[in-house]
Amino acid sequence: MNKKTSLLIMIVICLVFASACAPEGFDTKRIDGIKVQYINPDYLMDETIISWYGEVYRKSFVHSVSHIDGYKYILISAGEVPTAGYSLEITAANIENNAIVFDARLIAPNEGSMNAQVISYPHQLLRIKEKEEIMIKANVDITALNANIMKNGEVKGIQGIYVGQADNNFIEIEVDSQNVFTGEGNRIVFLMDDELGVYFEKEAEEYMGLLVNETIIFDAFQTESGQWVVASISRLENDVDNIDEEVLEGEYVGQIDSNSVEIIIEGEPGSFRIGDEIRSMIENDEIETGALVRITIEREGDYRIIRKLGML
Image (cartoon, rainbow, N blue to C red; front, side, top):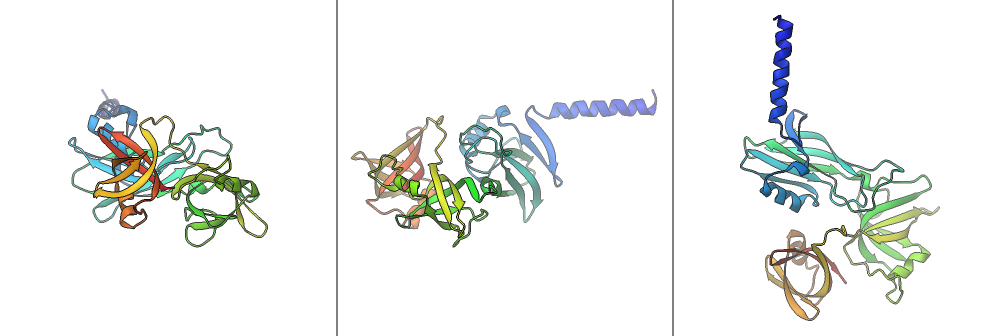
């Protein structure tokens, strides 16, 4: 057996062992010298990791958990987007002050492509060999979410937060700072199209009842004078297939403790668990006793957990 044949056999053996060591659904790559494994969530086997993944994949931007198999599992997410067809690409990774910092960017669907009109959550699930405790951070560029500008001065499918009506002709929307609009900070005042005003008239059949801090999708166009006009608005609805969520309206009473609040629903007081976002709203006095609220809850065992809260 000559040297070339021996070398070829050794290479084949190495490749066989390398492929055998890589679990199905796990793709090992190097990002700027850092070895990571991309994971297809469908191939997760460990119940602890499956449960953790189900809790965090909808939430932006980065989440990590250490596990007894010696790996740190990492999920980087762009959060909610209005249609299918979006993806998330990891573009770089650097070690800074005992932390791995990933750079990622949201990629929009190709122009003209047909995509299901359902909420999706673009993300990447990774894991790294955890030789020592290390923090995980991520910078996620979501410019693509608002980068659908048309040549005729129109924009479509912009995601924002409804702030409220300035008067009968103008509404205020909080939009990402990387968008095409100009204004004071991220809160932009838009003129309403003539046909849009009916959405805000409580007596009208088309009344939408938008809540302060509610996430919306809107289309807009720019006049010759430079004024942006909102042409249409729709809610960024939760995935209708998520049957565990429920929307309730009631009267906010106050905090029971640091992790729960009391809200009167249909005349009956009830206890609801809260997370950091709702707790922050309470600490900043954004919710007053007696305020009418609409909440989106999920049930976990005996607990009812508030995922979203808006003022009526």
